[in-house]
Length: 281
Image (cartoon, rainbow, N blue to C red):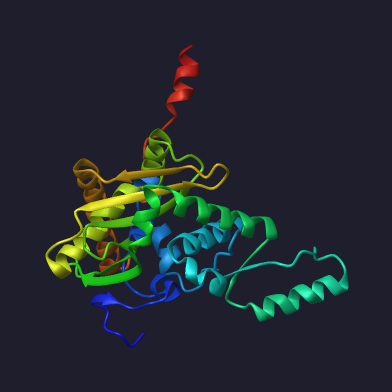
């Protein structure tokens, strides 16, 4: 990668995720609340012998929805509907092999999954509140800077930025987009870490950031209901604490060349609360 990794950098999604720099996703792979250790981080991002993770139908569907909603003009370039035949006969297998060769590098979905992507796209873009927010953004913008405390190269990739700087936008798929359900998703997947991580990178580069962070949430099944949520000062405070803790640990482990797991010290056995309650009864 010849371009200088500082400020805004024009990269494909694959170049961004496969290139250097610590992102929010990196932080998640060392987070203790997700039951992960430095060894998990090392195996995910540093281990030279790690096997590549295969795509699943769920991840392919999610990626296709992401493209369809954020960059609908590029959908046909990156996503195709698969053939209408199963891979049973020799002729069908040959047809599929030729089709996959012709569409190498693209997301290939089964017919029903592809059609559902189109339904999701149309539903989200037709939403009276969410649609206008999506249609006025610049998408897939990558930014890099060097963290002043740790010296680590850090990065972020915005799903969407309003041209006037009024808001940043992040797209999330979910089973249920209600406030209660999405609040649980925020806790389970540490979505609260994302706004302060991105905004701090922007502040370091430009001395400011968009004042509003908007989560656009859509359900993956009919009726494809949407949710729209903004980050609060309290969620930013909690997320920033986690981000700084995780980044410091990554930098410390990298400096020491030591990536420990759970068994560095013997610990007291922890039993789940439900088990203790059952025994007391």
